[in-house]
Image 1 (cartoon, chains in turn blue, brown):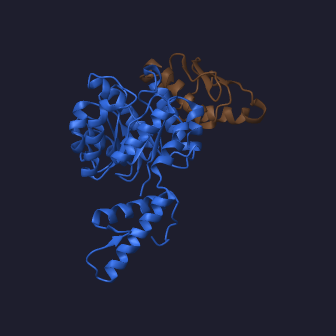
Image 2: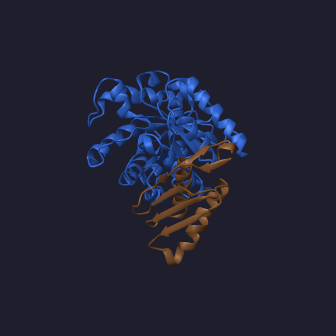
Image 3: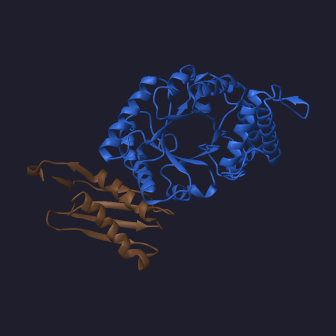
Length: 295
Length: 97
């Protein structure tokens, strides 16, 4: 399981933040060449991020959010960043599946040019318009490189002609639609940024809602948000123990060829077993259960 | 051939960063690299070598490079040199150079 509970965004033209990005324990880091970089510094940020990737070692996967290929910067971003072979490119304003195909083709071109394995750099799509939400399944299926799709809430709210609220009700449908598309396309779903970094209660509530909806993780913009998301997304020991008992009961019933399985007076069926298996895979991925330990 | 045709600057004279200023010199005058750094004694030579390496990659010779270092790491220095150099360069035909 490729754990992406947190995707920590780091401004692409800040040397100190780029160097220290790995110390906060995020599962995934995204060096940002898009919104976090002034137009006049796009070239400088591109050089800095490429060299950061080439010269530094990070303890987790590192991707790069590029500028959209319709801007004057997108093609240069892909050409230069692919030299350093990041784990993925995070593609903003994903709206038209043809754009994803075009990005894929450019990535393939540069992988061949630089001698990298074709397809080794993945894509994470940011979907942040109404059209993008409606196309989200087809976007996720537009390239085999796509491993996750994420929601960009601020731009989406603007496109929906509404405002962001602490409760996030205005994007609930879009969040749910994105999750459905991700599951149907068999890719991960990454929940939106919560921009009010001083509102911890609001952030916790927003993160809990995302987890309940089924997201795999959340984009974050402040290191302080990393541990909170991890706490919420990591199964509790009680949940792990319950999952173990469910699977043990299931296996025992299979061995006895028993048709009906029950645990603590409740029937266990396929979806419950699948959920228990997912909990234990997750627990293994975060180290709560050791690899090879019987689940 | 490629040569420096104007002043190019990149980076900031702020913590963890470095301000690089590249200016053209007359053909045949060679390179001048001036470094100001709080770690001049320990890393001055390494800083100069990195600047030379970036200039070598682009086959640039007749330039003056001012390095105002504020504790930049190797990857930052290299990146800022690359950006400053690109900002100062223009592809020229040999008869224009």
